[in-house]
Image 1 (cartoon, rainbow, N blue to C red):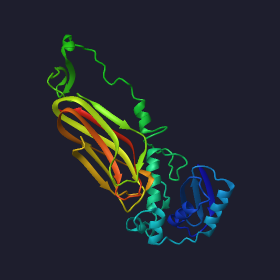
Image 2: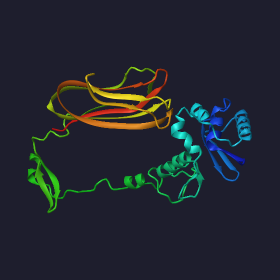
Image 3: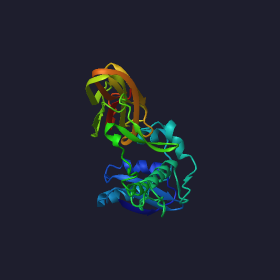
Image 4: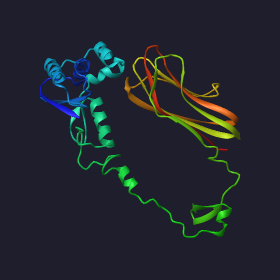
Length: 307
């Protein structure tokens, strides 16, 4: 990460971000800008800028007048409805309770979430000793350090081979016979596609198919997961899950909270159905508006018997 520092008063972060992203000379992977009143400005990129890019950045910062974007300018720059986001420019700065640093709600919220996940020292809201979910000293590290064995069986009954399991009750631990008639968890099948796919079509495109063969009659849980993004804030991403191109288990039509093909949201669901024989389950997606880009990745479909 590369940081560029300026001494400047009267900065509107939303407008400055738009001006930097609109500068064609700068292609260095803009990350975010941070302003701390009265005159501290920090602009962050994912890599060091070339000399001509840094010159262009200096010009943009020097020419920035601190004026908020109009609603029309905001919609044009960010590709989202001003009715949703424009009011954020007029709000009082949001203050992070752990550091006291203030900024726009969107910037503070993004940095706060990043701190809770990783607490990197490069994060403006970094707090020494704050325990994140991932990384060094994290909750996940604590979990990975737990012993592999939580329960050691020291009393294996003679009837073990005929099918028993260890059950904990209010009276203690006991060996219990397995119900041979239970089918829960059998007939497990799965399909996945981690790769990124995109389309501008308004007709559904198949992203993933799970095919199952010769299922015995019974109840089956079908579960799915995918991550999606959409290029425009005024139209919709669409996705559906179907059995045999006939029975629709789920159909989603949703407008992205943040537009752009690099801002991904996660969706999932499940449906229990009586099935037998051969079937296929499809996960399809499309754009509600021709020419607007719908993106999907990390898709999964899982089926198993429940009754």
